Length: 120
Figure: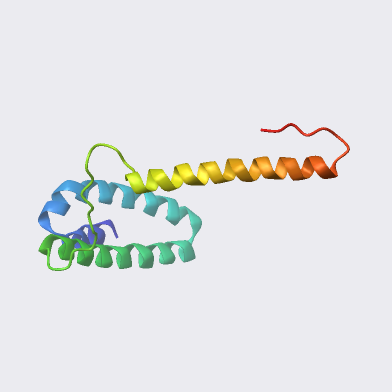
């Protein structure tokens, strides 16, 4: 099965094979040995999962390499401050509103309680 797996690795783009092929084969070999110890059913599931993954992975890598169908969007991050001034303003207003609500709640609780409440 290892020979068949290596043949299926040829479905990937050459650059991908060069960079990841040996590592993928090594991981497959270790997982194969582990699944063989678990029995035939585990081995069968493993084969189906791995070969389906090989085919879908090869297709995905070819699509990525072709640039016709970009599979992931990249966002250009700029260095510097992370939040806009609008976001910071809303955070500051929210903080003040929460403090005012806590103060009001403490005042209301003090009216209903026999015990002294510490005001913020």
